[in-house]
Length: 565
Image 1 (tube, rainbow, N blue to C red):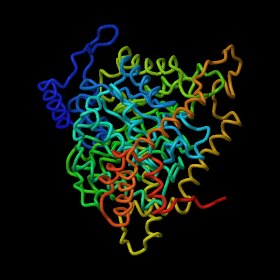
Image 2: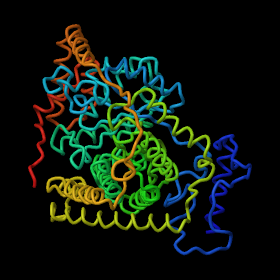
Image 3: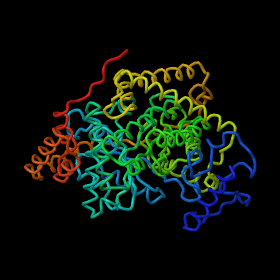
Image 4: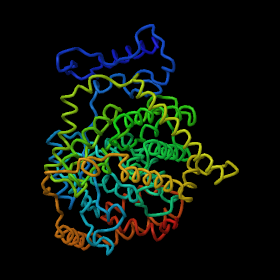
């Protein structure tokens, strides 16, 4: 322990010498100076302390950096998108002007399903749960006057993630940006779609091929960009427990590690490009323990199972969003409090970036006022509470450490179950991509993940209806003087205008060039070449999202989930 303290002290001193510690007031409200980190006293023996450790070193239970948030605060990354690209561009400028540190794009349902706005299946959905993006021209408008070289951009989309990404690249090119300098995160996580969210296009194997192509392209051309954000958020929102969210998500992450290795990529280079996206639910200490366990499990598996040798490759970086499923339509002002508690848990758990939900999101997309309250919630935590002065301030707490151990142990039991499914799927042990990947694919095929999640959701709902679990304004303290909220409503005129503009763009583009680009995509899809470059050519020609996805649907087919009872 004393040697670990000395290593931490040296790393912290090095960070100070390099100007990587913020010039800020690190005292309490009463003026008491606080240390950057706290731990056992010199010479004190704490059994099992190697599982807790010091910030900035394996197993990273206490965080990735010796400085904690003294070095850099978490990124305030507010998720936003509604209507058309022009309306969302205005909201992004508001977020950035009021202190947001990065953007996170919410797409509407047709876009999430790889459909154009004038597709008959898009009727009534355009712009309603996010922004409508039909082609690279929409991306130009979405990021107008926002220099993409200077702003990290997250895009929450998985099924058609790759064509949306190439449209983002084209928009950056048209700005004059150097694509190699772009930084941000693309969700891309198709496993969680089959497990929880259900927004897929193809069978799992073609999706994994596209993801592998993207990983290769980013590794070679856009080193700072993170092509995968492995998402537990949607798994938790579907009803999973904290341990299930953690285990299913990390297992998916292991699958993508195996995919990268199967492509011949260097784990030291591609593993740092994997990031994670977790839910921050309302059980305060359980969530903190979940985040700490996540870092520890990931570091151990990357080192011991997959052979990663550097701290950077063993480090789990994650974005957090407060729990949408915890918000209530009853007494919606209570959602401000819930969100603040959840955001504080994420910060105390060491999140790298954070989105706070708005109080009215249970009813509609956030109004401008509600979006500002959500943003200010993070800023109050960051600027007023002092929680960023000390790295892992709850480290060493008997309760938090016991919860961290318990969640880790439960996650390991789930990993063992996934390995059992892998053995059933591939008895020879000659897994095409890797053991965890085979287990995940078998679990998807058998409906195991969805069944486990459904059982957990049902158990919680029963507890809520019996009154064993409390929800203020729903089954306890239901008296209220709340007034009706003014909510954001997206006009149907948005859909009409989006379709008018889309038709105009189709009429003005070089159709022969579009046809050539789409035909080249199909040719590459029939072989084993990388699809990113031909897809880029299609996006540059203003091929639409639906057109790109449809030629691949025709080639690969679509996925239909088997009926289960």
